[in-house]
Length: 460
Image 1: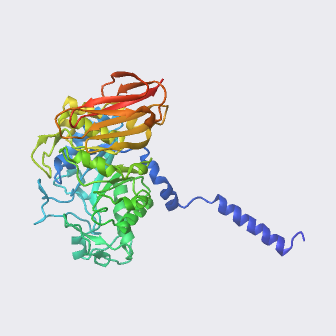
Image 2: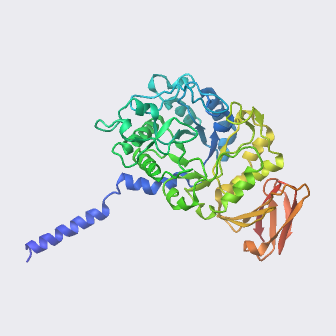
Image 3: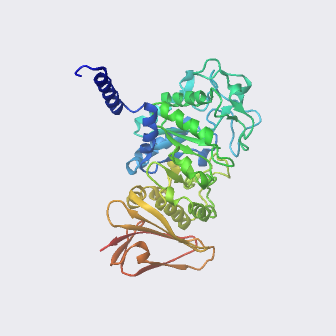
């Protein structure tokens, strides 16, 4: 029996089994498991949209990168994102030029930066040099794109890179086109060449050194699951960790399990601007998303419309934010305790001292980065209370908001047992560092209209 065929066959099976057990995980499968590691804390950065709309230029991007590197990087801010339509030579403020836009594309139907706005992109270099500039500052570089394939690529039947003769007109549909920006057609996700097109643009972005991509028109009014899956696959195969942000909202909560398995962050609402009503609206929408706040996957409150905005923006004139200081604290307290990604929308070099203080409070940022178990205690037409817990110790965080429009102050009272606290506690105002005192059974604060309080509660 020593060398019987049965014994040799058994040994062969064992060898195959062991080799399969120790075989490396395929690259694509590994990437599927790893993408959530790229954003273990909520991403923090700057985005050009609120202050420059679709018109931002290279020197302005660099100026904001310089400011971030000098003043914000040590606090965890790291992304510099060029928002919409960087590939149009003649766009405009206050909307979009959809009459005679001059697009810049390569021979494979892939948008390229407009050289008149981004001089370093000349000779087909794309965003490589600008990304290098940002990386040399110790920061990360991001861009915005629209889902789909350029209409001009379809009209000219441009070849899709990586295919054997498939052209853009073979993978598109005019149905479900974006209603507010008509640059692209929908990509039909199961068409041959559809995956290859998305692969080709993300391979190019990886060569440029892109670290973050915000993709628009994915979530509403239609949730485009097919294109989202193509995008996820394209990022996974490009061999660069690119954080994926889907935009805009409102992302339907019924697709929560799908979006959290494909994106690092997703918008809950449409654009948030410097008007108070956007803040309580965010609180209302957030109710459906608390259970999905997790490392690597973050419900997104949108950009922070503070500081100097709309220099050449999509909405309104050049201005400092119209929100009062109380309203600015309330907006920031909501973003922070909710653990939303933080993307500042104002022009950073124009910041005043107060705006900078909102971005550099170490106690508040520690809560934002290292808290867990975020939940809403209650929300009425006048009052909101949100809490979370420290992941390091027994501290509990509490945010209180008076969202009423009535001029008179309102008292907001919390039973500390609702926070799981039954012993004496010390409470600290996180924004000011002021010790509020010691409390045993309850804690209450009188807050003016649109004002808020953000507190750390430490059990004795």
